[in-house]
Every structure is written in structure tokens, then in C-alpha cells.
Length: 575
Image 1: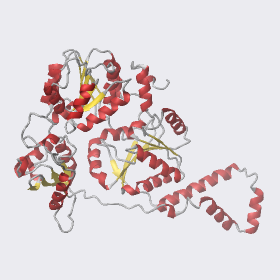
Image 2: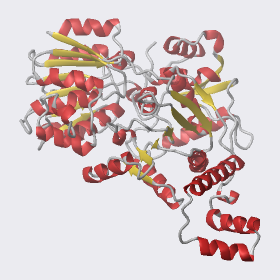
Image 3: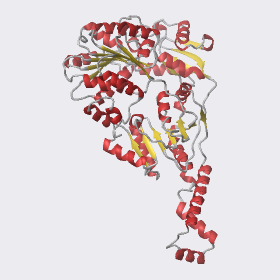
């Protein structure tokens, strides 16, 4: 098959295929294979069930953008998402696929409503927004959904968790009766099913099973290293593997470029892929990699989509993946076609808690190992040199070297001559000074964590209601929540370290602003101050920074944690 034939077979037009080619996609994901043909038929409502990170945005964006008329003068599609971050992410993704002059705009709480009013008045074809702010515009009469063709609920289960499902219900009532309703969710709780039954017609349920780890063919290990030592750890891994052939994943394109540059300076055959690489460059880079002219490909997750190489020896997570699904997709690139592969993840101190959470979600056996020592690396290199020498000796062809050999052996004894030649040929490779010390760090895996929560007495909270909130949202038993300290604007609690990441994630589902509701507090104090006193000082400093006349504080308030305008209490959490 030729390039993009898999996408072409789904029914997408050539203009859309060109935008896919520009993005660097090569093969559709399972949810895209299921969704795109059904959406292009322009008949059914759709329930798409797939995990985060499986390509749902492109699954609905590509066909919807084909059916939208650019600059029609009215809103033709509305995408509802649970958070402002996701609103921006979806807007960027849809804009990268758009055809012609189609206008895609993000509408969310916490941003200037004046600027949003200006954009809506000027004309928007597709709106991506959070429920509260969308409902606000509908109540003001500044958003008209009477001609809407598509209403898309993205991450519907998260909207339920955040308490927006009633808002979603009201928003749907504003839309044209003939609109198509597309609902995407990782899970299907009862309330979401009820919503679907109430508003959806002629429904097609498209489900992709959660990705799982193929542990039988992928050996999964992780190394604990400081962020500044990751590069040296990577070079040791490369040097101890005689046939190293790998994709190395970084989080950003800047990191990709920096890592490729450092690898090239060190003499490794490496190339990089990210969103700024043109299609022509991408094809050349992939050709070199598949032919093994380069053996190291450094890439971002998006740029690596569609790369089909079946004989990789390693996948390296130089940066920790954003979620468990991304981890599974990354390491699934090794251990293919019956070949044993190795997935290596570098974990810095700051990434450890996220890694613990990810490992639980993946459910695979990811074991800790120690970085190879300098002595291990050099010993292996010496063995490789001896093996290569043996292969050359077996060939027995030394034309042009006999005279030099005779002259050297006349002047030096064989041991001295061979040692001198090895030093000349492999001085840099066998120099231990080439490998700096890699420092380790210790992680408290059994102790407790101090949690900072951005609500306090002024928000109507007591120690009892803080404990109840944690228990309700995370399921952590009350007996494991200790040392609750309530202050005017925030609070502290002590919980088991092993539960800290899960509890913070659960509480932060209640947040919708820039500042999270819960964070793991720094340990220890400064200049003899208790952690709470230091945190209070820093929090007040952040709160007042940039405050001017007539401006509200940047401190989290109810609009940051609650996008629902009908709630008037000062609390960020509704008990």
C-alpha cells in the first residue's frame, strides 16, 4: 500500500489527507478506523468508547471538518470538554486539520469574556468550550446553536466527575433538533447512559478495548536518575548494547533537538522527529532509520505516530509519558513480530510519584535496575573489540598491511605493538573519563506525604468537611487521613505516601482553573519555619503577585474551581 492508503480507505478527501500528511500521521488508530467512516456517512449519532490518548480528537475532527462550510456565518459544530486545558488542546488539534478559512475558537471560564464576545460576533464555525462558560454565553444570547449540525461531548465521564452533567443537559436543549450528537468517553456510567438515551437517535456504539502491555515480549525496566544525568545514563545503555536500535521519546520538540545534537556530538548515529519536521524531511529520516543508516530515533509522541518498525531492540522513555495509555503505545513498538524487546524508562525525583501512579494503571511488571557502571561499559567494549578482531583474523585478507606489520614487529615486541595500536585506535572509546558519575536519589516509598489543599475557613470548610471531601472523592478511609490543619485560605493533611498521587488526582478533578486544588507539599521548612508557615507565605506571595487596581486576585476562587455560573457560594467544593 502507498502512503496514507489506510486513511484514504476510510473515505477522507484528498485535502484532508494532505493535512494528515503534514501532521505526520501514517496509519489510523483503532478509534479512528471505527469512527471516521460512520461520521462521513452523515446519518448516525455515535457513542465512541476509548481511553484517553487513543486519537479520539482526530477521529471526530477530520470528518466534521470535511462537512463544515468555512465562514458560513453561524456555529456549525460545538465540542464540549471538561477543562480549559483540554479546550485549548482540542482547538489546536482541530485548527491543524482545518480546511481553508474555517474558524475554530476556544470558549472557557477564566479567560476574557470580552475577547470571546468579539470573536463570536465576528463569526465562528466551530466552538470548543467548557460547559459553564458555554452556558453563560447561551444565557446572554451571545451564542446561537439553532443551526448547529454537530454537538460533540468529549471526555463525557470526566464532565460527570466534575459535576457538569446538568449543564450539558441544558446546553443540548439549546441545540437544533436535527443536530448529530457524538459522545466520547472512556467509561459509560449510568448518568452518561441516561443522557444518551434521552437525546441520541439511531446510535452506533463504537468501542475500542483498553490497551494492555504485552509483557511476554517486552522486558520493562526503569532507572532512577537525576534529570541532569539522563543523557549520560542513555549513553551507557547504548554502549552496553551491541545492536542497539531504538526510538527515544521526549516530551517536547526542543528536547528532541537538544538530545539529537548531544548524541551527534558524542558520535552516535541519531536523527529526530517532531512537529516542525517537514514531510519531505520526515520521509528521508524514516528511510535512513528503517535502513539502519541511523540506529537512534529521538521523537515526540505525536511525531512518532504511524512509525512501523518491527525489529526495534529498545524503546527509551527519556521523558515520562503523560499517561498510562501513552506508555502502552510507546512500549508497544518493541516486542513485535516475535522479537524480544526492552522498554526502559528514566525516572527523575520529580517524576517518581507520577510514575508510581502510571505503573499501577498499566498493571505490568516494571522492575527497577541499576545503571551500568563505567567498568561494565568498558569491559563490554573490550570484549566487542576482541570479537571484531577475531572476525577480521578469520577473513585472512591483509593486503597492504604486511609490510607495516613486519616493520613494527622488527622494532617492538608483539605485546607492546598490539597495546600501542589498541590505544591509538580506541583511546576515546576505552577512556573511563568519558563517562561522568551518575548520581542516584532516594525516594521515601513507605512514609507519609503532606497534602496542600487550596480551600480553608473562608470557604466554609472545617477539618471534618476536608476529611469527608478526601474520603468521598478518593475513597481513602478516614483512619488514614491525619493531622488536618485548617487555615483561612487553605489547608494541610497528612496521608500515606503511597496514596498521595491518587488523592491529588481525585481532588484535582474538582479544579478547572490554572491552580490545582491539591498538591503534595514540600518537605521541611526554611530558616526554622514550619512547612505550613512557609507554604502560607509563598501562597500569599503568589496570590498578590500582579494584583492591580480593580483586578481580582490570581488566587484560586470559585470561578477557577467551578465553571457553573448558577452556584453562588464561596466554596470551591460543594458538600
